[in-house]
Structure formats: structure tokens, C-alpha cells
Amino acid sequence: MPTPLAVDSHGNALISFLAAPREHPPPQDAPTPLALVSLWRGDHVLLVFNRFRRCWELPGGLIDPGESAREAAERELLEESGQVPEGLLRFVGFARFILAPDLRAEYGALFSGRVRGGTPSVFRPDEEICAIRWWDPGGREVERLQPLDAYLARLTRG
Image 1 (cartoon, rainbow, N blue to C red):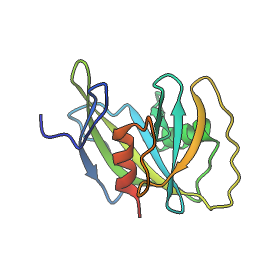
Image 2: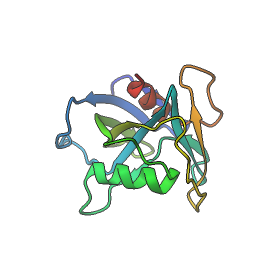
Image 3: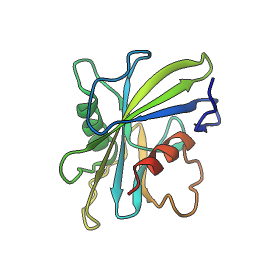
Image 4: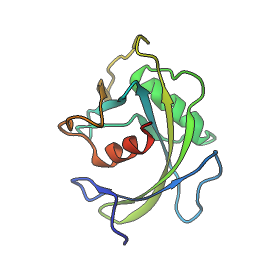
């Protein structure tokens, strides 16, 4: 296994990132079951707190049957945070993960977007997500921040 870009406390690893200038089909050497969103407000990226995993992470989740990665990213962003990006989300690329304990490979499609500083939040806690926050990746680390998601967020900064 190549040297991971980031590893979490459970042994899950971000192995590589395949940047893409435009949206295209995912690599075929492993499934692509999830989509993630790096949503920016100024120099801060949106994080959601997952009740089950007990950590801060990027909004995102599983791609439903018949749904595109983009549709899943838009749906998950709204469901988990109540945020709506300005315009279309930008496709950034595919993150390749090796997941513990069985060392299963899979990809996640990564999208990025922006909101204005004065955009009101319509966040409502639910059974999965109990809080949101805006984090400056150039500043202090956040306690319980998922390192794989922090790495991906930093890739989209700019």
C-alpha cells in the first residue's frame, strides 16, 4: 500500500486524490459509493458533527440507487447542514480510500462550492448530524476533526 495522505484513528486511509478539471465517470478499479462536499464561506469550510462517528467531517454520504454523485452531494449538503451553495457545486475529483478493518478500496466523489458570509443557515439537528461549524483550515485544529476530511477540505481551498 502506498504511503497514505491521511489516516484516521480507525485505520481508514486516504491513499490518493485524482483531481479532474471536469466531471467524468469514476475509476473502475473500486466502487464509488459516496459523495462529499467542501463548502466555503470566505476562508472557512463547513463541517458537520456526526453523532454516530462522534467527529467533525465534511457533509456527504452514500449515493442512492439511480442518483448521480452530484445529486447525492447536493442532497447530502442540504440534509446535513441546511446550506445551499451559490450556483452549481464544482466537481473536484475522486478520493481513493482504503477502509479498515478489511482493507476494502473505494472512491468518494468530491465537490466544492461557496456561500456568502451573510447567508442564513437553516440547520436543524437530526438523528445523524447534531451541529455544524465553519472551520479555518489555516488556523487551529478542531478537536475530533476527521483527518481524511480535513485533508480533502484543504485540497479545495482557494
